[in-house]
Amino acid sequence: MAEKLRYSDAELEEFREAINAKLELAKRDYDQMMRSLRNEDGNDVSDTSPTYKGLEDGSYTSSREELMQLAQRQAKFIQGLQGALIRIENKTYGICRETGKLIPKERLMAVPHATLSIEAKLAGKK
Image 1 (cartoon, rainbow, N blue to C red):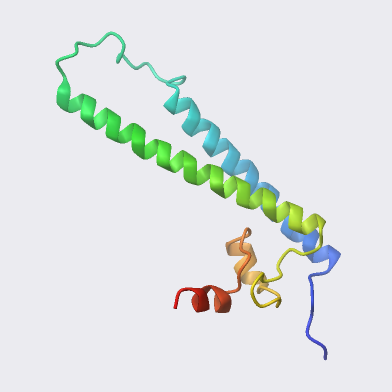
Image 2 (image 1 turned 180 degrees about the vertical axis):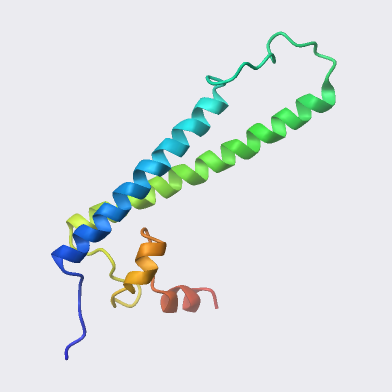
């Protein structure tokens, strides 16, 4: 039997549904992070509290920096998912960009924006 070169349209549709569900959740999380960074959801008193709370200010700044990093990582994840949807449209989804072989379905369900097979990913780390 010949090696499968790409996923079927039915399989691609299954991947699309899974990716859209993850994309919706990722966008919701990102929006929540951004609202928090813009202080839209809080009853924060940072604009009215005394300025002598130096240690608390440092902790607040550190927390905001960490949240900013998380938001940036989430934005990159969203871009990866959107790229996966484009590859589904182009019918190139699930094809390893290094080996040209199909990435196993299990890997794509776990990491839907993957563009490398485990084999290629491990080879690149050497």
